Length: 111
Length: 230
Image (cartoon, rainbow over all chains, first blue to last red; front, side, top):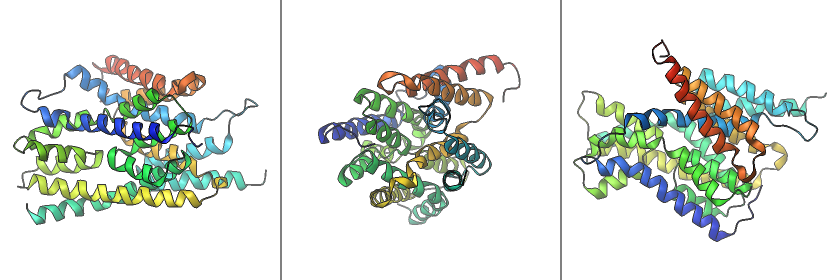
């Protein structure tokens, strides 16, 4: 879907997200000597950020409800196979290839 | 600067490119889908240079989420890099501020993972040279891949369903981040809540799911702390 935001808003997102991202990367590298380590409680929390956020990004795209209440079978199957491949290989290319192939196979299969 | 360590960094990062390049291509395609111009897509890859957050921001921009939600989501995804920054900081302590800033800019999951292993080994290494070998290679590959994806995305018909590659990339990035049982809980709770909260206004489902997942992971860690929850 194409955004309805104009060029200024897009540029704003790029610049602000860029500045924040750089600040995160630079944080402890810049402050070393004054602030040497992350407080343990925060560090524990940070460990769960990637699995929680990434799963929250992934699952709603694999488990898609259609207007009639049913689940989109092509995406569910493709996602299931891709999850297995990701687990076994931890390889982006293999995961993408498996998921896309299953998606196309299900869509082209005569039902 | 030690040229052989620079070359070693380039060489060590080469096996990562089959993962980085398709990821970048998907980001390029997502930029087209979100309605960005080529120059905007390039600007994003250069300025932000963080794949997962770029992809999430593009996805949300495409569905006209409020800009605050776009920015908060993109930021939360990058919070993990606080850990890398803290972990690698001691090895950069003697460098000038300008060098530190330059190295911080190319800090990624891969640059961190390769460099920290090399720094912790007993072999002497020119830290900056090695790190730049890795980070520079990844940076160049990322820029080319996103531009390539943009060009490709502009030419591929919607019927191919190439937008489905986006969750597949996230899936491939997700799995290795699950290190233990509380990590499984964080992912399962985060994903399920995001599905249920999918109908929330302002595209808040993602952040609500992420928050629930983090809470779930911490709670599970508490439960398993005295047990064998690796």
